[in-house]
Image 1 (cartoon, one colour):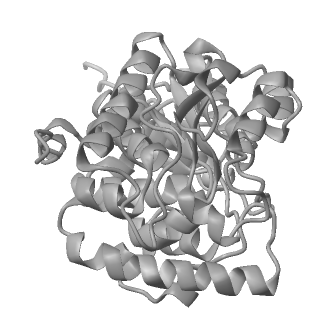
Image 2 (spheres, one colour; image 1 turned 180 degrees about the vertical axis):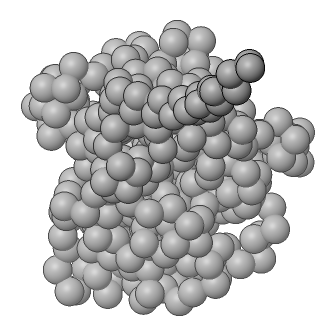
Length: 367
């Protein structure tokens, strides 16, 4: 039995400041560029102002990419284009600077943090700061067994909370959240299907490296079988993550919820972060107000989850590589919105017309 009470997050999480947002809207109405002329940048600037409780909005100067990493046992069924247990190779590419997200982060001057939760490799193969939160080596094959024990799920969730606190305490003012996993999109599809009440075929996509038709059918079958195991525990979100999630997904859920508690805005990347956000919404209904969707990755489960949370992606450019790369491309858009909201001049106030002085009436001459 878990001692963690997720209901506490409902009381701890507040919405971004609505009064500040109205002040930001009023300021925007006074600026020289007409409201609406900047499209969605107007809404982004006002959202940031509310999240920061600041008018004018402050620039985003200390963003960070945070990636949670893990291997999933379900990948052994051939549901991924990568071999099962090879996520550590992707992590090594991020650390070496040769992955897409590493290249983009270097160009945008954004630090990248990788958190190993369940990679299927020896801890000694990676730096200590990467592996120090690891819960286990790989997650269970969710179509026939639980991904984690309930105690492991709690430990992973709390690790995500701790990472969120570390980022907030270090001054991070916006997080780009992604995953580095093999088999993670299958687990994410199961979570979305279970929480949205849909069939496996509706949510099953082809993953970061598009799989062929045969692998897609195997993936559909894995999602279908895992769904049968998920439905009995739908009312308990931590148990749901233990049953059909994984250590990386449990950690991402805890991370997202604690970021909302600490009022740290987050840009979601693909289907895995969207699925964790959907679980987070079930825990605390106000939490999604702190999150943006950076991009549409093309995964049907992501579209389903974002629609359920009423979050519209900022970009639609077909980036499905994962690792936060697509969401990182949305960061300059958010920073541009902050700059425009803060730096566009306001219109000069119109001078009131001076009232005309009444003409003096001539006095009658005295006789």
